[in-house]
Image (cartoon, rainbow, N blue to C red):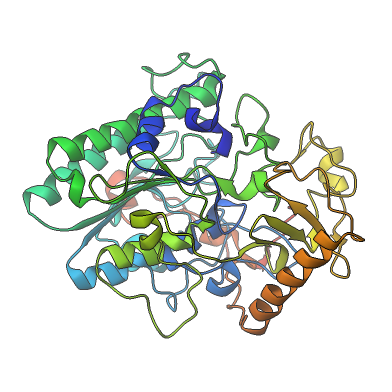
Length: 483
């Protein structure tokens, strides 16, 4: 989902009334970032509070490559990582994930092995439909057992875009909130719907309703769902006791074309790039009676902050045996304080750029390869900026490209290296980078190896459904990450 997809950020069709209202009742973050321009690493960072290069959600198979968890991935979230729900358990929290997990699909990587008590959703993205002899359809789990597969028991009509999945996810969410409230138990709900990921889908009630096509229909249904959950918290009388945060895992996938992707507003490029369009996200905090309504915070925030902030809200401390990249934003939420901090833009094993204050320095630029680009895959359609959106990996470490994101949010006009402004900004940024690199101990990369034998052939529960498939012989290989 893109920064420019919400009415409150200027989307012309104004089709997100519930999210816009959530912002009016809470705090809007125009400078909020994901930890990576791709799904799996950013989700790993949200739940660990750590950059992907620390938590292992990256690859070293090639320089500066985005990597995620497709069906053939061998790795997933490491047992050495401590996830948010594991710590919340100490205070008696009941933890549920609804929707896309994407942190590894082999048994020991699944949510119930990493602090979640309940799960309804899928381990991978809803690509498909697949041929069972060659690549199985992705399973949908209810807790530890599969209850069907995408495109089979859980239909997605690729032709019309119709699917009831978001509706099912909403009902699961409302039901979970109701039961935890009845039992008077504190809860953590990670609601991770994926309808805006290509192939986009929406239920019949929303299909054809948006001015923005099928992608807009999906956004409208997500907006409706968030509205329903907030209304449910109010109806149950627990809105003042519940901290809610809305954001996305990466920017709009502009390479998917106008029918399958959203808008990144004024920002450059989109998903998979470390330009602003790939990593700056819509973000709204809501907590009636605690967060002053109608506030716009200029705080530089990141999904990793949700780890530290959630623990703080629950009266818990972050682990002290590892480096946590997320900040506790409680002072920001309550008093609109500003905390000075940098933003690091990583692509795989490489720190591509850094933001300090309004300044962003690019140490490497790359959109995607000429090979991909010549096949019609364009990460920056209609937005080529000479010397910036490069199709070869360009190193600028000796003289970084520096942009002032206040004046130039689209990263179109780099500041001249001969100016005092450039020299002042560079000296500030250099100090931050040196400190960061000095303390950086990369984690063991989890996304290097692939094997057809590890795909979702026979997930737990497949016997009851008669859905077990025969796995091929194990033949591991080094995954190829073209992006």
